[in-house]
Image 1 (tube, rainbow, N blue to C red):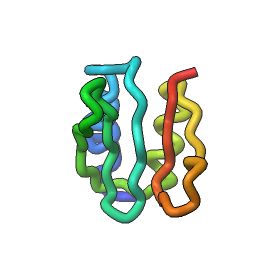
Image 2 (cartoon, one colour):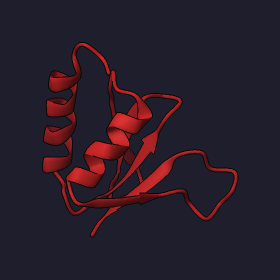
Image 3 (cartoon, rainbow, N blue to C red):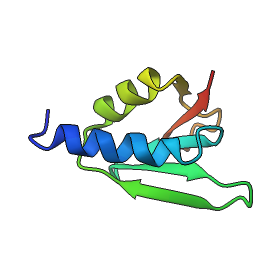
Amino acid sequence: MSDNQPSELSRMNAFVAKAPQDNYNIDQYKHQLCRQLPSGQEECLKLKLEFVEMFAEMQKLGFFCALPMDPTKTHMECQRL
């Protein structure tokens, strides 16, 4: 776990709290969480967190995360339960 984990988790929680109804993607290679906007565009937040930390936090926030149906995609898609 990173030294700055609490502040990074706070940033992540604030980002999700702005639009909790939106769907999100966790990109493990770019270390970012992206929100899927109604326009089809993305709004992303770069984080100093490991993929597992982002995944666990999204679950705590009430999201279900899974790999997409497209096998060429490497991110996790998260939807609020």
